[in-house]
Length: 380
Image 1 (cartoon, rainbow, N blue to C red):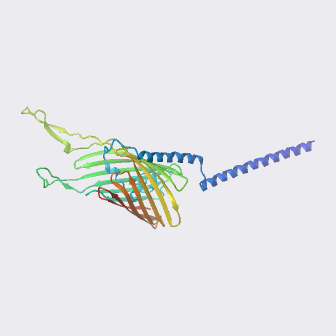
Image 2 (image 1 turned 60 degrees about the vertical axis):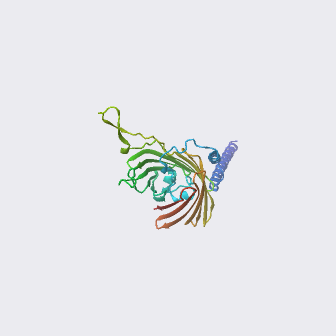
Image 3 (image 1 turned 180 degrees about the vertical axis):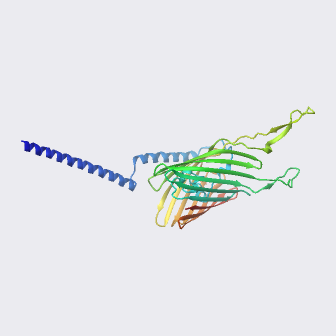
């Protein structure tokens, strides 16, 4: 009896061990299958839900654009902040918030520098209207696990003009000019391998001869990488800040408080200008890679924009890379007053431990002169 009982217990223990072993093997197989599915891009329910929500938002914005009209047309100042910066972005008609990835991203989406692996420097030049010039520069670097830091500056300037009056129509001998300035600092970080965010704090100043207006503004941005076609969804909110107001010595004057009193003194006074808001701007976009081979890379992007002082607009852009050396770009800006077609070309070349990029863009205008943009970028 005792021998039979022992054999029975040993048999039960053996069965339990085999059962436990099979369960562990099954769990291991399920984990391996899940990892393989993730590598091959098999759909994840959570990703599907997020993708549907984001794409629905993008579709809603596109549908809304066709109907909406902004009641605050032309009410914002500091319009130089809305001039597109850079040749790569404008070559794609401004469909860039999801594509921005180097120091030039500081002018479009601060989240674009979150995944930098090297230092990046960017310079852009745009001959603007008449004698005006738009010049921009940016620098960004990765700071270990803390994230990425960046700094940018934009200056819109004009040549000096001689002061004239109704009595001195040939000039008084004095000269005046005007200048707009933006200086910003940025912090960005990748919160996961798919999601990154960034914020920019910037000082904004406008000057017309002896009068100036200044203020502080903020840019916020995010980028989310989807699991298919190297797709990225980008969002940015630009120029969030308080109102600005012009002030300066040319606004001071004296006046007679009582013209009927023969001996009263002239009283000093100051003219007060009206405050104006900054051009708050929201932009959301989707970019994806439609083709990737050893020789060609084709990328498509579309952005929807919502400014606080104009109607909604849509930007469509594309970029074709040949051997990752030559880049051909094109795009269309929908629902703009004067702009429509854009084209661009870029050259990219590795040099020792650095990487040089030279870009050019052309933007066609219906009423005003066409605009040419030039940019140089260096990563090292």
